[in-house]
Image (cartoon, rainbow, N blue to C red; front, side, top):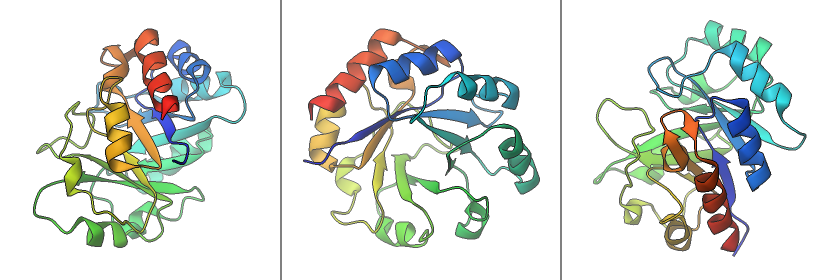
Length: 206
């Protein structure tokens, strides 16, 4: 089975970013959404990015962010990729000079393949749990059987993952990457080093 990548999202502290990298994470995620308990300022985000070693991908998470505001963040924070968790259209995700992902929240009875196909410019699609009024970070697992066997984009699986279920998730879904935030935390916005290490170890075993 191809190597599954791992992203630790919702990083708010330099020490947590370095812990994730030391554990073997391929990417870290920084949340630029004020309503999130894991929200981070551009100043703090820049300090985290500056502390990282080479070859670690930094992903910025946005929710319906106005283009001028997002462009101001990009001028200050050297993000590698953008992740859109709101109601953004394909056109609203494009034009920033960065590869981007679109997060889709999964519900029963929808044509998920068609929703994925609408975002042809995306480098990947992230699938997360649907909870009304919450754009992500719910800590809840969705029904993986709702994922079509074939999608037109690489799949990043999120939603309630932790060290106890990630191996089963990888075996069941065969995603390109897995994305975790709450499942490796001590409290919201603060990572637990042991949980981060356990999560990455389980991913690497697959």
